[in-house]
Image 1 (cartoon, one colour):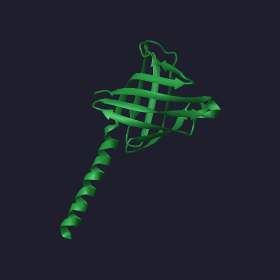
Image 2 (cartoon, rainbow, N blue to C red):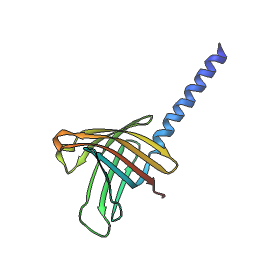
Image 3 (cartoon, rainbow, N blue to C red):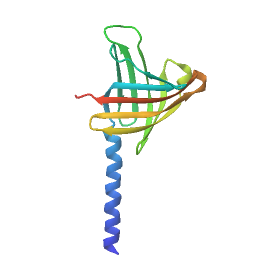
Length: 143
């Protein structure tokens, strides 16, 4: 009986380490390298040739910003809190210039492949006339 209890505790410890590892792995600074939007049967690819999109994730919050390279125009950003349970990543957008997006929840599935973070899911906000499926790929920036 003691061996079974010890084995159970060991497995629980290993499981909790795996869960912590998953949340730690998404922490960092990420640069978008690919973005696809599917809306009304139309696929749009984000042109990243003249813009930089960065997402920063810490233990409890995320922030993102986008700006044209070599320009002060077309800047936008946002920030908020997030939850991560396995591969289910949910952002709660608390800070943005678009009032209809404030306090909205966006649920995604994430996948980590080496230094690449892949985020996919539905963004739907009726008040902002948004209803689309997105796939975004980011590479982790080195310190």
